[in-house]
Image 1 (spheres, rainbow, N blue to C red):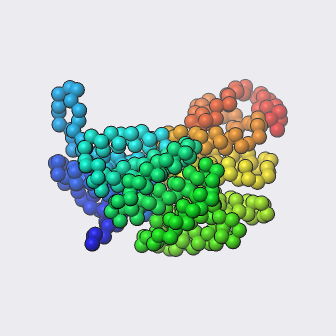
Image 2 (cartoon, rainbow, N blue to C red):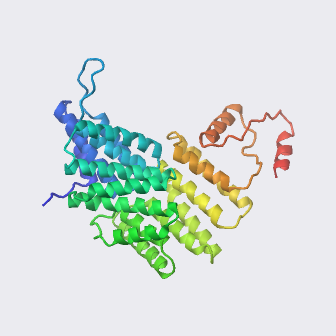
Image 3 (cartoon, rainbow, N blue to C red):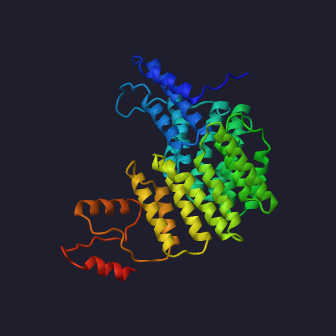
Length: 401
């Protein structure tokens, strides 16, 4: 019988105590293993992939310093390094950074191959299954459903003879990715079969983001009463998880987005309220530093514009709002490829319109605003000098209006 897993809080306390101990190979390796376990916990029961990314990066940083070796001699393989890379690739995939994920997947596969572990080793097969799941998630993000479904099939094959505890933890994630792949591929009925089989498995004791994701996906691939029932089940699960302290912001937003799509054909006002509820789930935590939520927020804005009739100026008011949120978020880190694609898809949904984006301002502030616009892919913008007491701003404003 396996021992219970430590909580994230208990693990953080233990890691903090270990960090204060004198440096040494044993301490460094214990620290790396602890951060790997924390990253896995963040992915299994948390809803913040950036926390898992920080933990896995800390695991790599805590590895003992490499021993000097002759030039050209390869570094010896390290199972802990491979484990940390597995966690980091999963965190990048969950955090809407497919390019970074695929780069880490390549490094992980090389590290696992260099270990030369027995191909039938359960640990190796589980690690490879998780790497394939991360690759599949990244490929869905990049719009490659066929390759993603192939990666899901490989992951399932690798898990077939694996330990029951690992299979129960990995298979639901593979199923969720597979359903998204079938939806993207244009065969939602196949996704319905996958999600139905996944939901028959026993519910985990701790609230799981993947369980919530499966319930929401069930609503997406269903119709009629089954769709309504799936939405009610998902809402009940998320409310129960929230009562236990799990704040699944992105899952709540996905639930409201699914509700909006259901309401849109017959209840435009209800759909607008559902879209607003989806945005309201993401904007407060995004303002508080959850930059991983910016891509889902942009996709919600794009879905609303593509689903409901145009509201004219209201669309541009909302665009200005999300632009300000995006600029503040980008102050905390660079724009990823997924963010640029989401922004460009949103801009492509809007009718072309010339507009004054900022009132006259000092040159330094204007250049900083221009830098932020370009950081998220807005390049069709230029500066215009306004002479003192000139009327150029009013003329441009009237022409744009």
